[in-house]
Length: 387
Ligand SMILES: [Zn+2]
Image (cartoon, rainbow, N blue to C red; front, top):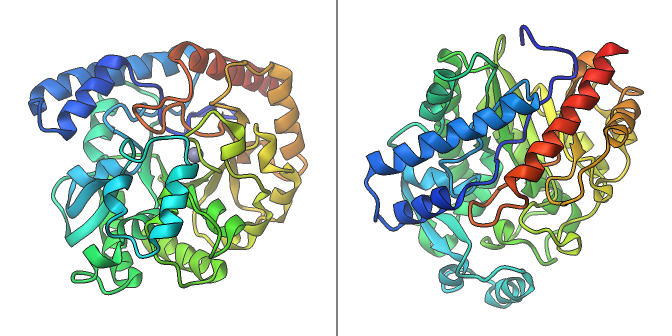
């Protein structure tokens, strides 16, 4: 990417939505707001998010995901053959009801509040997923833009519910083929439009790696009957990702974001464990950058990243988006210096561990604290650049 300072500061994607935006998103889901009215509210919110990033020193900006109810289910509106279901509704269709019910009880959110996209027809992309959002942002900034998309494994995994999907896709593999096609179409349009950075979000990979086939899963993994081993699942994830990015090169950077969940401020409900189990799979993924959380101590040691192939860049998570305490500049500098043992300065980008508002109704922080935290990353970057 051209014209970027060293240690570019970026975001993982989402910023907190205002009450007005949250209300508009809910109304849109219920069909109670006209598209033009929704867009007017969302456009303004995106410009506010952009301003926040520009004033805090973010070098690669996102639209704050202001138009999305969450990081993956927004695709329901762009693709035919998918419907949104609450977890409570899904209970009627999942195969292992006892495990799913246990999971719902363990979650710290009510089952009717979270919605998951489920395939109940043949997929057909009826409108771009993020291209128009990218084009809107591009009209308002000269900074490079990061566009974020849900990853192919997450989509395939979370959307296939046998009783609803089988008629159209007899297995996850056949659904995966169409998910890959949809994401490739989007990627090519983004590339043609000049987008310089596309990040795929695959937060469930940690869960697959850490919890094995029979443990309790979070809602994103829970929908599916699980017959494959973690190794088979992770190989499937690698294959899908590589098919999506096949042939993409040159100006457009591709990245993969993997965290341990970002739906709660309660540390104990989020996953814990090092990325070391995922390193072999990351190593065979043909993306340029891995956007990883390292501000949380649950992620373990940065040193495991030394095992990645030497050409892989890191989007280093240096602040926790979920805590109210704002990290010190030194905290960020220590993280970066630990990574400098394994990567050159050109290979290190700086970002929070995850978004500030993965779910529109459940932001993990306030806009004020998000701004302060981004400012700290920028201050640390300035020090690193002067060294
Ligand atoms: Zn995340």
